[in-house]
Image 1 (cartoon, one colour):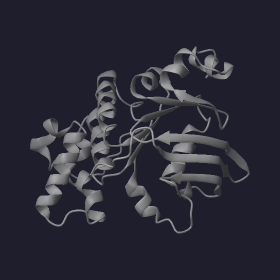
Image 2: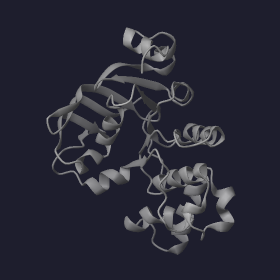
Image 3: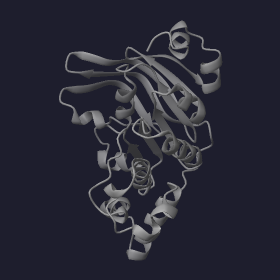
Length: 259
């Protein structure tokens, strides 16, 4: 299912978004637009709030004791934190891929079929097979696992496991895919495959990626936001951020003077 929104339409908008863990404030007055059909990279030193922001988009922070959110965060104009929002539904619209590949201890097939089964997306086995095959195809993995779908997902190499997790995320036809340093546990060849994949997935999904690698941000994203100490210091077209940053902090980070 393709979600046709003109490229450049604002898909996710944060306005004065603040996040607290108990007394500690992790994000301060974040104002940030994420556009449909683009890859937005979040960069910045460790502990600067990138992953916290990412986890607001699918309300993963709800699972942390004492977490609370101020301000607003909207998806297609609707507040994600509205009381009436069905979080399960939200997480079907917003897929997530973690830093460390985390396939379920199930077969390759069942890893991908898991979400569609829960959400009742297939009316019969044929339809489920189709969803699984399509998702593996889109994740660039089908050719490698086609004849071993009944083997455990954990038997795959690290890079394949991460692509399996991407297949699992896209199987429920989300509109957005969040990626939290998806390549940090992978070798350069597996990383290149995932980056290539991100580029292809952008045609059907809006992608937000947290990355420690500035080279990666420069390669895969159209827009980049630089976070520092829980604030967005600068946001703009990736090329502009990397070649002509407006803020001295951004410049310092990009040239490796700190971070």
